[in-house]
Length: 498
Image (cartoon, rainbow, N blue to C red; front, side, top):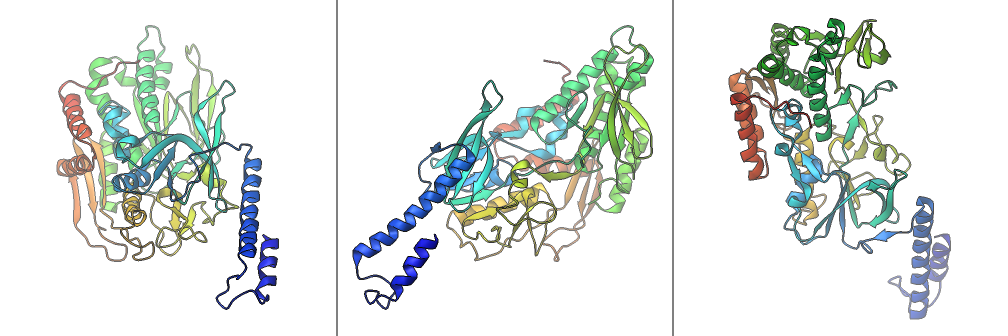
């Protein structure tokens, strides 16, 4: 690059250099272009060498838009560009979009897993393609992405390859935050709740602990442990799962496992001062009262500091217990951790490439452009934050950003014609026993919110169900979701284990 600049500066003083800044000598022009291309080629080869692969797939990537992620942002952007003439390529380890507000319902069988997901390929038009792989690294200078296939060999590693892009959208989301507690690892009764496979594992584990507790000869102490459920976090996902679990125990387990019901205990642990932190205080209190009436043990201003194995007298199965910040030790058969969010590994590795906020999110401007890479790289959803107007990590934020960016990449509006403006639709939660809450106290754009009102009880649940039913993008799910709601009420939830 230095040689090219030196060459250019030298010949600007040459008499053969005209007033418009171009060379009269065509051979000289061609020589300069050759040097530039050689510099770029050398840079590309250096990157390929560093990444340990030279397998470039899909060609040069001229005009190509690459989107990383199939979450709320990536999926809605893909739908917006379904009829676009632009080449679109989606890269993600997940080949489907999950309607996350309904995820807790699948963890106990109120809804079936396939009823809340949409295959990403259905959202793509004739110019769209999907690649099931993890993005490992990017190089903004050469506009290349290092990817690793999710299909691994006998060593557990996937094939690595490189995809080129012209425009890149980062929408990789976040992962569950364990706050550096090394003993919080998935498995052996400990589960996260962010993906469909998480919900499936939780559902299987719930059935397992009831079946284990029902084995003749299982001691009372072991039954108490097996049927002890700990939910960590006091946000909407945790509270909705606690409500779904209560309904399952009351309406289904009570009928199918009557002898085990006296051993069931549900504990919800929240480090903050209240449940549902973003909600209105009256709705927080309403939720707390409901949980108290249902004998759900809510422990506020308390955190889980670790998990340990232990041996019980006469126990048949491996036992574990959680240590709380107040010194209490709670044995459990199922622990669902839904507390906090942190950047995924891909985002963490961008420190030397893209600007980052102190919390690890990618810094963007009001047009969702990554600072220093305007016109080339955009970021949205939970993985990004605008320095001048930070927004909460919510599904509705990512959804609106995906739709906004779709118009830009479609060429319908210029990339800096109109800044992104989030319009809050309020907050909702399902609380079991045909009750819910709706918080419309802050509806509208930040700083211009209006109070629509608050709802509780059955009417709030009706708004919750109608609202989320209306957000489904396929008629398959619009039919499947109410079908499973009615089925679970009339016939009960399925407790088959397979």
